[in-house]
Length: 583
Figure (cartoon, rainbow, N blue to C red):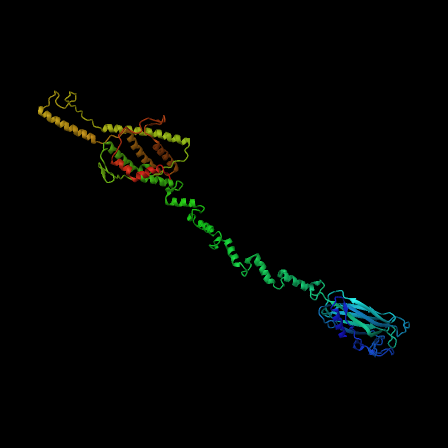
C-alpha cells in the first residue's frame, strides 16, 4: 500500500489536478480495535451482556457481524505519515463502505430495522477534531458498496496540519435474537483514500489568505518592506532609531549629525554659546552694551551714557548737564569775579576796580605799570584783601506775574527815593567838612586885578625888599596848595556815590537773606534785592525812560601797560569766549 501511495503521488505531483492515495484502510479485520468475538451468525445471547451478544469477527478476517450488543469497532490512519511528501495539500478523502443490513438474509423476518453507522473523524495536529462525517446505513438492504467523497472546508492544508483519521463502525440487532443476526461490515472490500494536490502555499504562503502561515508570511513581508511595521519586526529598533534621527538628529547622541545639530541648537538658544555661532558678534555687543552702554558707540543709550559721563567729569560739557548753570557761574567767576554778585571775591574786585579807576582818573595814563610783577601801584596793593562776604543764591521765580512786577517796580521807586535822600545827606556832610580856602589875589604884569596880601594902603610893610621875599613866599605857598589840591582824592561823582550805596545795600540784603527763617521772609528780601539790582541811576521810574547821554564819555583812548595786560591775559580770552560759546 505504501508503494502504491508513493507511486500515485509521484505521478500526481507533476500536475496540479487533485490526486488520491492508495487505499489506506486496513483490509484485515484482525487489525481493528474494539470488543468483539470470533465466529459466525449462530449462537446464543451473551449472558454477560445485558444488551445482547457482542460483535463477531469473521474467522477469515474479512469483516464483522453484530448481535444485540451495540459495540464499536475502529481503525486509525495517520495522515502525516501517509502523505509525508512536502509541497502538497490535503483536499479531503474518498470512501467505499461495503455493508449489508438484512437480518442474515431474512430481510423481512425482523420486526424493525437494525441500526448501523460509520463515522470518520479527521483530527488536526493537536488531536482536536477538525471535521467529522457520519454515514447512516440503518435500513434493510443486501450487500451494497456505499461510495462517496468529502472535501475539507479549508484549502491549502498541508499534511502536517493533520494527525490521524479515525474510522468507527457501530451497529446492533434491534430484536436481540439469540445469535448474531444484525448488520454486517465487509472491511476487506471497503476503501479509504486521501485527496491531495500540489500546494501553491508551500513556496508562497502569501498565495492565498487561506494558506497556512499566511498571516506570518504577510507579517514578515511587511517587516521586510518596513521594519517599523510592528515593534516585533526584526530590525525594528534600528529602523526606529534611524527614523527618529532623520526627523531630529538630537533624538539620540548616536544619531549621525548629532554633534552639529546640538551645536546649532545651543547657538540658537544662546548665540554667545560659542564664538562660531551665527549672530555671536551682535549678541556679544548687546551683552556688553547691557553691562556698559559706553562699551561701543553702537550701543543703545550710548549718547545718554556718554553725556552723563562727560557731565560727571565736567558739568560745563553741555547745557543739559545737571549743575551746568552753577558750574557756568563759577567758571565765569574764576575768570571775572565781577561777573555776578554771587561770585566769591566780588566785593574785593569792586573795590579794586574803583581804586584802579581813581588812579587812572588822576592822570596816570602814560605811565607803564606791569601789574604782574609790580606789587604796589601808587601805594595800592596789587591784591586787596577785604572781608569775605558769603555767596548768596538769589532765587527768582521762573514765572513773574504782572502783580509781582508791579511790586518790584514799586520797590524800585522807593529805593530811588531812599538813595536820593542818602546822597543829599552825604553831600551836605561834605559841604560842612569843607574848609573855605583863603582867596589870594595876585597883581600880574598885565594889570589884572589879582591882589597880593599886604597893607591896606598898598605898601609892603618892611619895604620893597621884603615885598619880594613875601611874594616868593606866597608863590611857594600857592604852589604847595595847588599841589596838595592836585594830590587830594578826587571828589566822588553822584553816580559813583549811588554805586557805593547800592553795593552797601546789596551786602545788607544778602545778610538778611541768610538770617531769614521762613520762605516768606526770604521772598520779601529777595524782592527788595531784585529792586536794588534793577535800579538804574538817572532812570525816571515814573516816566519809565532814561536821560539820553553819550554811552562812551569823550575821553582819549587808554593805552598803557595795564590795559594791554587785559588783552594779553589768557583768562581774558576765556572770559570773552564764554559769553558766546555756551557749550
